[in-house]
Image 1 (cartoon, rainbow, N blue to C red):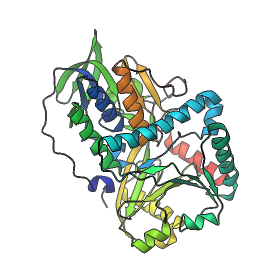
Image 2: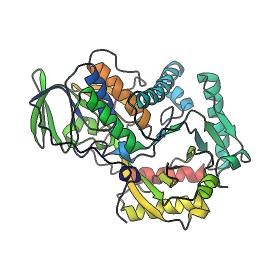
Image 3: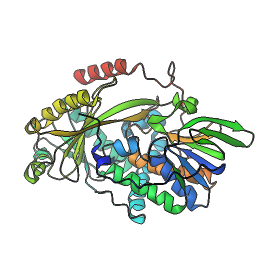
Image 4: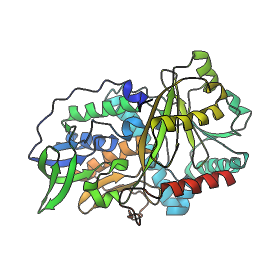
Length: 420
């Protein structure tokens, strides 16, 4: 088995001629995923000359490799977030996450992006009976503190939601959505291009240096000068952005996709087409693709793994959840990198004069689109940097880009899952 991403295989990428590298641009955006393309679209719409520099092809990283979940909130649950940053700030941040979901839906509509967008609803499944009180507290906090309605589901209610006896209850978020990630990032790129952004692929950034009032950006295709630079690299932050690279841990997330299921089987396993994840620290997440494949992901390993090894680990997990899929052929296996800051919250602002937005911790579809758009407004002088908790974007001790400590962290979280 070779690494092959289902989403990318279903999308025909636009063929772009190798446009010349400009000698000067108002804004150089490093990274051609959701963050960079959303920022480029916003800047170009405001008349700013903007150039996106992408090492591979647009959307090559997590923007085309994720599960396609579009969810409210952040990695920390809202009750925990309120303890971290205070109740008032947590309320504002939660509203920001809802604004992000509204923005992505509006953008898809305005730009006519065909990406299989669906208001599917999202389920958080109790992996153990002892996790049910936590889901109850979460529902109560969302209702009474944030005025956001979710629905607790008892085990008997799950029969209408999932064809599995593995779980002990769930929390239903009716506002959860889904999309086809590669189709969405392709549409976002075309929207940025229509607005006037310059999109350069196969252009690796090798250094960024401040020279007086401008930045000199050295690339694999030569150098250009820019008034401003936006780092939109998240889990793929390169050595050229060393100070930012030390602030986000790239963690592998692995996904498999089966052959297409029969309508009857698909309807039995996930009858309402929702996106789902469980309550473990090392969670599973899964959904049906638009062509009725089971798409099943998780932290298969915390060390580099071949597609064959990660597919075997996830196939075992999939069979635990859905025993009748044990003999169904897995046709796709791929991986991508999510980015975790120390506090598990996204960060946006400036560091050493370079603008940045990154650290989405697996919530990047909506947050990256929103924060990329907002940072485009900030660079254009039309907005302030959004409030994301007010914490300092800390460098991670003894970390220079290679996450040598992940196997230790993986063991810690496995133990917590076992004990919970």
